[in-house]
Length: 66
Image 1 (cartoon, rainbow, N blue to C red):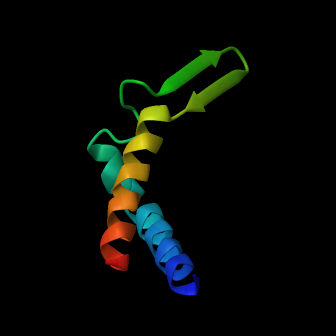
Image 2 (cartoon, one colour):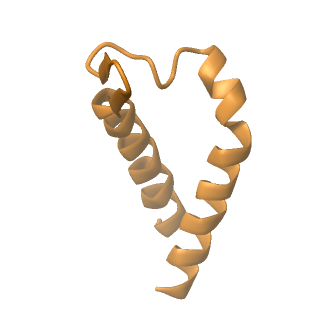
Image 3 (cartoon, rainbow, N blue to C red):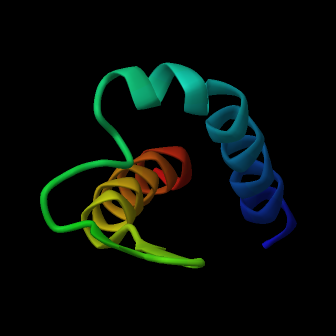
């Protein structure tokens, strides 16, 4: 369990560091991401982005535990 948490933490740190690069590929503004902007209010819900990140992390963790 501790090894999984360490790997998960390292993946989160790497994702945070690479986020500007990933943004250039369109990650974060995909179809299916909900963005509502009104005066004095903005709401952003990255549904599609979250699904893609979840699948990628699941595959990485599955391969790490093999």
